[in-house]
Amino acid sequence: MFLTDYAKTFNAAAARPLDEPDCLHSLFAKQPVEYLAAGQPLFFEGDEARHIFEVIEGTLRVFRIISEGRRVITGFLHAGDVIGVSLRDNYIYTAEAITAAKVRRLSRRQFEAAVINSESLRPKVFARVCDEMAAAQDQMVLLSSKSAEERICTFLLKYLKRAMAEGNAQPIVELSMSRQDMADYLGLTIETVSRTITRLIGKGVLNVLDPAARHSIRIERPGMLAQLAGDDDDCGDMRRDLIALGERRRH
Amino acid sequence: MFLTDYAKTFNAAAARPLDEPDCLHSLFAKQPVEYLAAGQPLFFEGDEARHIFEVIEGTLRVFRIISEGRRVITGFLHAGDVIGVSLRDNYIYTAEAITAAKVRRLSRRQFEAAVINSESLRPKVFARVCDEMAAAQDQMVLLSSKSAEERICTFLLKYLKRAMAEGNAQPIVELSMSRQDMADYLGLTIETVSRTITRLIGKGVLNVLDPAARHSIRIERPGMLAQLAGDDDDCGDMRRDLIALGERRRH
DNA sequence: CGAAGCGTTGACCATTGTCAAGGCCAGTGG
DNA sequence: CCACTGGCCTTGACAATGGTCAACGCTTCG
Image (cartoon, rainbow over all chains, first blue to last red; front, side):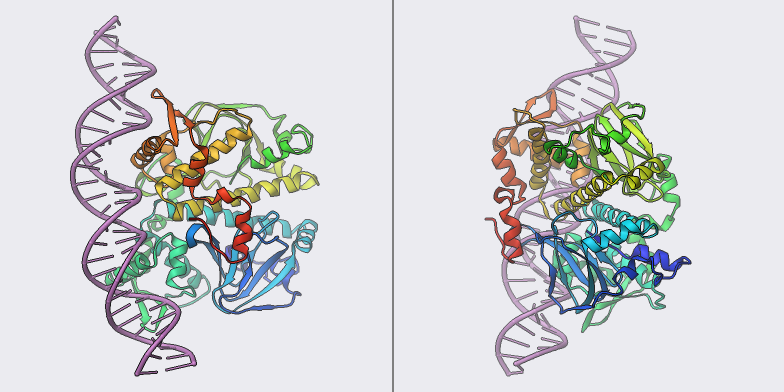
């Protein structure tokens, strides 16, 4: 499936530079860059999974179409993400560019050979797969027990954290996807997404920067956003310890 | 995370016997069997992930507790399943026996050493991780866009298929978990689970065998169950091809 | 200027959650 | 042996969250 770039972020924070020869990133470095126009598919659900891709620039959506045109987006891909590692014979989802995007590809054969031979690459790939599973778990928690407001806040919080990690001084989230994409990702309708955002603006949690650019959202109160996300993130690491002791918390 | 035993089923169908030395299963064979009483935890969310477990017998639930006592079950484990492969440093969920259960454990160190050294084990582990990701995707689809009835039917269908694959002549599903467990797994409340099952009985789709044994469910109309699950499984493999062509179907 | 795409808003409705009560069975203690 | 209690499940009445349908505003593009 796809891999978020959390691992990359962590690595960047550590001592190891990104362009070191044993970095996952560098595997793709020599491949030619491919350009995708907005809306252009990278591959379809059901296609034979011949390649692994690295996103260089832009945003892609990863989704499955279920009956009667219902679409479920299982993830978004951004610069640095790798897609196609944890797959067997065929892609089980479609990947499609949301914005104009650049990617590089590697055949599975090449990729696997490189990973098997490299003592330092293997744990990196493994870490990515683990992060991917963890993200899937989080999404399952979100979908199975969070309210619309919690879903939206969790989603925005994730992008806010990303922006902060990238060193942005301003608490501004640049969403490259449409409301419909957000809805299909969060298991909501476009109307509920819209209404919930409006309500959050009313609460003073956030603001849409410019009526013309509704994809740029300024988070006015990050703390409150985290509260409303309902992740208990306010208490940070203490949470796990408490749960391990069989306790409950919040509210 | 955890691995379903689909891979094992497939292997059993193929030529390779299960007790061959290069089988994942055989790795655990020499470990002592540990016994868990119903309700007993195997490990807690947050614990250091030191071991990988194989379930020998019984059923376990894998879950996370989120705020105010809300519990999300992300999976059930049955005989043959392996848990703990796709994890980094700590368990990110709690695993707990539902019924009395038997497990065997292997330290991650041992497990990883064995897998790295074995040419034949590596693809098996990889296949399991892929299956696990695919299962997580399916669950995300279920949670983000299926109705209560579709969820229940999908759930029962999965267990029906398992029973059929095990060679059971009777279309009977033996659920080892409580209604509450089902609810927490399917993102519903216990009342909705109960009502939906009652409604399915009313439609003649299934029947509870004995009022005293509500966990034994006979599927009266497997075809209708599949229909109601809304997975488009009625059309089988054609589905992927159609979607690859950008088409839609069902109804 | 008109049309299309996207987002917002409103009115209404349905599915599901919440709260409360009751049935059934098993286990326990009188 | 029976009554009592607790766990689990079911059922009912009601509320609420979110979905559906429809209209409208804004922007862009021809």
